[in-house]
Length: 495
Ligand code: SF4
Image (cartoon, rainbow, N blue to C red; front, side, top):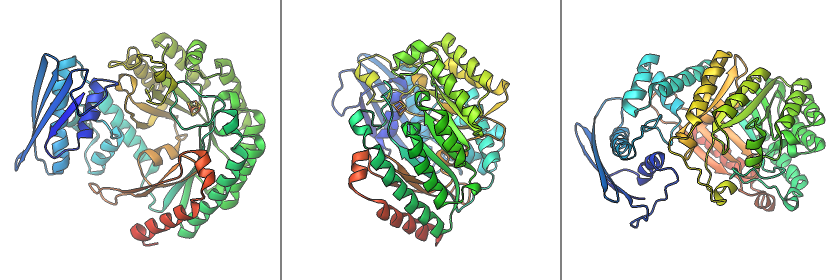
């Protein structure tokens, strides 16, 4: 597809909108083979922005114009985006006969948009109306985003400006799932790096916690994520957790998560170690409880192994258990998904996170040449609705959400929790409420200065660790990263 933008707006914004209507589309500056081309013309005057979108597909042409009057609460950049978004959605929607559930909300977390409006003092009803009228979000999704924003605000309260979290990356997995694009080592040769990797990570955790303490920050949550953190042996888990416990008073944490992940790596001994070092949240992730679906996506474990791992988690006494599921997996349908969901609800985990299947460029599934892009997402919409309705009926609340590009049917990812059992790290991270110090290969630290007043923009600075474990082991960057952390807090917090 060729995208031409005549005016002062990033072309990427238009491309992202087009991806909603043409899943899997590739962009080029030359005339493209798929015959798709969109011209966007923008004009701005004192009264507002006007955008024309003309979309051609071989001999079909659709055209839409949208004028957005300037309103005091909108910056002109946002007014421009809304005018262009509306024109593109109307033109593309006419051509393919489709109205996306999330309207023009792409590349932005819907609950964040709702939070901004609520912070300005708008009522719940007005926020829902604005999401529908300004951003073309369908009513049930506008309600969801608003609910999530309200729940987040109730859970977090007034953000602590000196709050922060620590993320530790364990980018190793026993085997590779077919839908994964994450940089995670799985071959035996690369898995042999784990002992050396753990030593380096422990040294970096020590250094990072020292910096957090010196700055006088308040460490709220620790999250050990992957990959598959429970690929580590009990001794390696002990080494890592004891390093965290030596560097900070874990009794003051709001939450200490060991993501775990794949049920086939979970043992009673590993969770006993986790419990001993005050871990209070683990994730045991089946993705689906249909064995044919699991085999099709190369998960290399069965539903029976999930139930075994779940029982181990409950018996360990670790307080909170999260289970991850994916809607729209290849081979899944409403019948198999709803059966999965009913079984998960019977277990009554503290959190259930429902993702929508996302087609990742580097995944094996795509390399296999499968035609898995889908505009309407088949049964996915029904499955998403089922999970949301059933969760609420069972006493769960949607407490955080985000969206990704190229999801089946363009649906969202939502975390549900029983009252008081919400995964707070997820909210801190998604809503960019405070800094996340990240340690390990592929991990990205995000330094945050949360806006003190509604309408202000947050300051966010990303600081990168090396992407691959072998690079991470080759060069020690932790002292330089800690210097950058101190510099950020000097500049924005005067510490
Ligand atoms: S367990 Fe997760 S990170 Fe590991 S290969 Fe599977 S999807 Fe990727």
